[in-house]
Image (cartoon, rainbow, N blue to C red; front, side, top):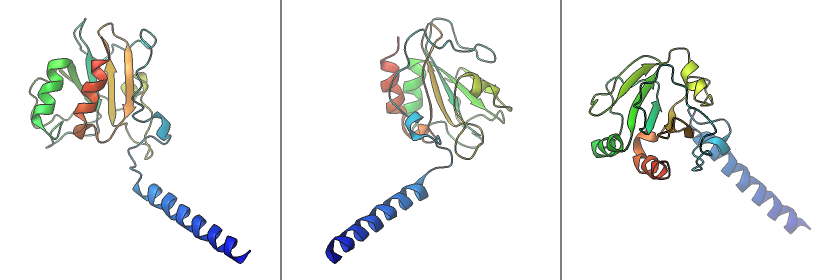
Length: 170
């Protein structure tokens, strides 16, 4: 009996340590419900029309809206090749609460300011753990419907993933 209690306690302590480490590693910019973050599943076509207020994308073109807190003295993507790949695939629109712009603006279609968070809310982005403005992106198809939206504080290092999702959108 003592052996079983010892095994149970060892497993419980090990699992508790893993849970504690996972909680420690959580990014305050992540979605409070991880099931909604970076699902990889496209939303059904023609279900969620994208709002047009404050967004200047060309009709008949796909659009990527990047929501970030600030781009002052920063690049949009870690690698410039990633940025040019995305710009050639869709209209890139940057939305920040402070109206900042990245160091290199090559190919970016439009900048929008969302000081009160209304644009992020209209696009269906959820509030991150810290309660501040969302950091992530929204993909809009050429018909003007939202096909993917997620919080992703590391989108600047995952252009390959965004391109993969864009490949499934007309």
